[in-house]
Amino acid sequence: MYDPLIPGKIYHIYSRTIGKELLFRNEENYAYFLRRYTYFCSKHFATFCYCLLPNHFHFLVQVKESTNEAAAISAFSNFLNSYSKSYNKVFERHGGLFQRKFKRKEIKLDSYLTEVITYIHRNPQKHGLIQDFKNWNYSSYRTFFFKIENLIEIEWVIDWFGGINEFEKNHLREEDNQLEFLEFEDL
Image 1 (cartoon, rainbow, N blue to C red):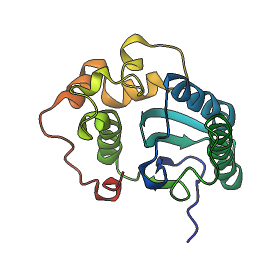
Image 2: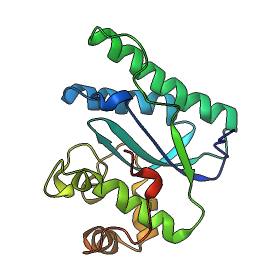
Image 3: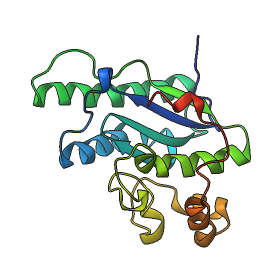
Image 4: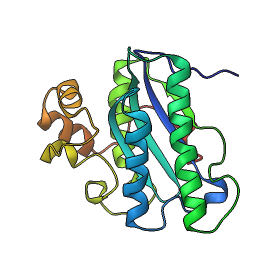
């Protein structure tokens, strides 16, 4: 089955390691992963949010109009391959790091877009890695409050929510995501 990355479309892209092996063994691994992402993907994708967890990751991106399907898929594949090769070299391991080709889900509904952003940021708390997702060091959540210059389309996301207060309110509501995210349950 062909899973395209069509210019102009928004996608939730995610993957996990084989056998729940650690994807990040230390602080530098997280930073290096984002540097590799920026190097390979920034000219092909506008990035709305991300979250890196010990054995998987999530990105919410829009494929730039200036790219094409093949270039977008190649950029993301090259990013993951580059990280995997470096990881294998540093940790003296061999073979694949990721369970399968990266997954992607096109975001077609406005309400789903809102929920995916919240889902991605709340993911560390959902998995019991931290008591409060706002304190997770490896997501884009805090970027929106401090407007740290990085790869995130901060203004676009804040405007999408109708302001920073609505962004925060949406993330802090009691019910954890109204939409079903069954396809992500294996992460």
